[in-house]
Amino acid sequence: DVTIASANMLPITLLFFAISLWLGAVAPSRGLASGVVIGLATAFYFMNLVANAVQSLHGLKYATPFYYYGAGLSLVEGLVWWHIGALLGIALLFVGAALRSFESRDIATGGATDVGVAGVLRRIVARGSGA
Image (cartoon, rainbow, N blue to C red; front, side):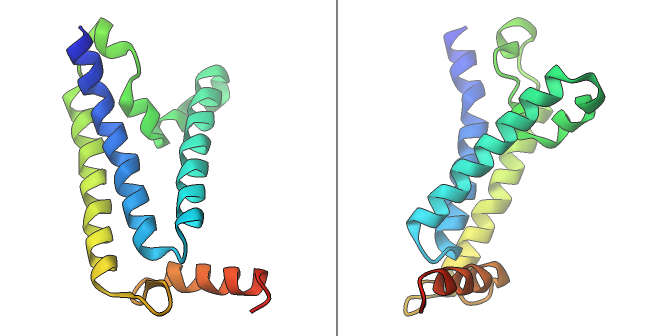
């Protein structure tokens, strides 16, 4: 049971790791990348919590990775393999995006040159710091 519960945590951990890896490659600073990943994980968790509590928002839970994680249900119902596959597949997409972004990273500007998000983030940070 402990092995199953531990193995069930791996896909969602890898998903958020892959997102943070990608954001680390495109964001102008590690702090911004970390803040966005933490905010994203918190928002997804809160959205899943509210969707489970409020009947009219019940369909919203399918848009969060925490639904596919299944928390403690793996001990009761067993592993849902397509949920694990979905989380790992999305994680692989983010790892691929991170590799592509890192290959084209411009060290002088601190972000990827081929990703529009990085340019927008750089302009926002530059305006905020008065540069």
